[in-house]
Length: 476
View 1 (cartoon, rainbow, N blue to C red):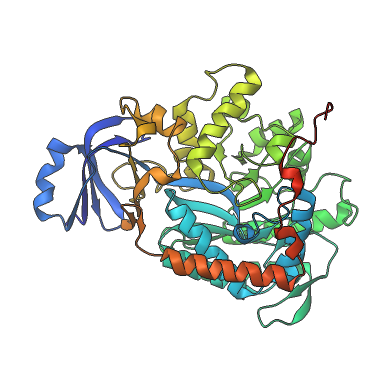
View 2 (spheres, rainbow, N blue to C red; view 1 turned 30 degrees about the horizontal axis):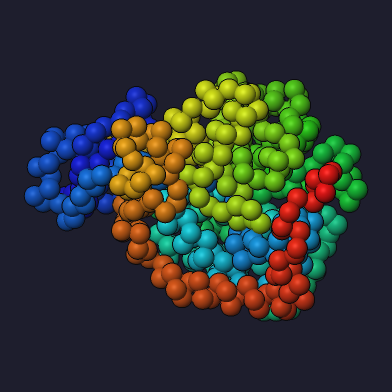
C-alpha cells in the first residue's frame, strides 16, 4: 500500500539519466520510494494512499547530504567573534573539561533541528573538533547524540576516535569526574559505540572512525613511530567493523602520508584537502579515497581545494558544511552556491562547476563518498524515501522555468517546505514534526551559557570593535 503519494512536483531526480520530470508523482511505501514518474501515470495510486501531498509549485530533490560537520560547534559558533585562535582554544577547554552530557544532547537537538529545516537528511558529524578534541572518552556522550538523532528522524554518521597526543589528556567524564584518558581508552569507547549504534539505514545512527591528520615530521608531540602505531590500531578497528574512516584537515603532503600509514582506501573520506601536492592527488587516485570539500570553511580561505580538477581525474568529491563555526551554518544551498563562486573566481570562468554538478556533490556524489549510493542520493524506485520539497513560489525563485539553476544559485534553507526522511515527514509547511523548536532553542541557550560561564570564557561572548571597519587597510 502507498503510504505517501507526492503529486504535481517538478522532480530533479539526480538518477543515472539526470531526469527532470515536470508534473511528477512520487509514491512511497514504508521507508522507500516505490515509483516515480509522470503524475498522470501514478494518479490512480491516490485512491488508496494513506496520505497525498499536493506539491504544486514545488521542486522535489533528494535529501541533501552534508559530508563534514562538527558536533559541539553549534553552541560555540559565535565565541571569539571571528578570532579563530581564541575560538579554537575555547573549543579545547570546553570540549574536554567544560561540558557535560546535557551540553552535547542540547547541541545535538539544536543542530539537527537546523538541518531538518534546511533539507539536510544525512550528515557526517565529528563528535567534537577544534584542535582534535573528540568526546570518545566516555560512551555517554555518543549515546546522547545518537538518541537525539533517532528523535529527529534524520540520519547521522557520528565520527568518533582518538584525539591528538600528548596522552593521557584530562577530561571530565559523564559523572563530572576529572579523568586522564589515553589512546587505548578512546579507541575502546569508539569500538563500543560502533557495536551498539552503527545502523544508519535502519535506525538513522551510523558510527565511523576519525583520526587526526598528521604530516611527516610535522607534529612535535608524536614521532613517526608513534603515528604509525596509532594509525595501525585505527586501521585495524576500521577493517574489523567495515566502517567509514574520516580525517579533518588534509593539506600539503598529508594525504600521501596517510596512504603510507595504511589509512586510505575506498572507505576513507578526507575533509578539506587544500593545497594538495602531486603525490597527494596520486594517493587519492591510487586508493579510491573520497574528498569532503568545504568551500565555506576557513581552510578554503587559507588554501584551495582543487575540487574540479579532482573530479576530472575520477576522484569522488562531495560537499560539506564544516559547520557550525564562527562564520557558517548547515545551509547546504548556500554551500552549493559558494562552491560555484569559489572555483569560478579561481579559474575566472563562469562555466566551471555547473549547477548540476554541485547538486550531485550534495546528493548522489555524497552518497557514493559514504558508500551509500545504493540507498541514498537520488530519487529512484527502491531507494530510501529521503525527499525535499523546495517551495519555488518565492520572489527569489521566480520565474520557475529553470529549477536546477534556481535551486543551486538562489535557494536557501528557508525554502525547504517539506522534508521526508526514511519515508517519514519530519518537516511540513516549515513546521518540524519531530523536534519542538522552542524547547530545543531554550535548552541550547541554557547549556551554552552554563558551559561558557563555567569555563570562565564569558569575555568571548562580547563583540569586539574590530567587527567594524577594515583593520587590514594599509591606508587606514
